[in-house]
Length: 252
Image (cartoon, rainbow, N blue to C red; front, top):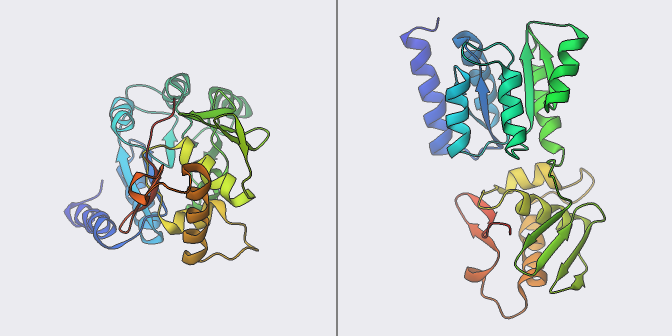
């Protein structure tokens, strides 16, 4: 069990993250092992992750009902309900947040059951924290799974399968980066994304990965989806200097 000094260390890490860092991702770890939670928080937080934790299934579902996360690290064996049940509940509710399942069991049948329930990846305890980081980075780059291939907001309609956008029935031509930006925004309405997060998730490694590249792409995307005479304050894509960009409206 972590002592007072360890708890204080966690608090300093989290407070420091809130006050001084741009977070690459917000992660929820669900596990009843406080030492494991401490290790994951201490490892991921300095790397730009905001790590929150829940010790049981009900607490996790409470967290998830009020907050959005970029990924969930979910233990299979919890005191009140197992990780498979939680995963099943989330997927049935339409929650597509990437999930890494943790377990002490290495049997193939357990892994297959986890994947069939909707988990995105699987780690057997004990595991390397560097491996966990690599798995997190990989699943957060994957597109979210939605029941429909079409995302709609007003007269704006994005088909994520054939990568086309229409507005009022008229097709709008977007570059691959503009399409990926809009898909990310529309799949996570009301959620802010920092410039660093957009660069990590959208920009190919061989492209110009700079803050100015993000600003220029957002400007072009706004002009195409909002129209020429819409003020920035009324744009579908809201900007905030402190926290980044978000899609202002909820989907239909």
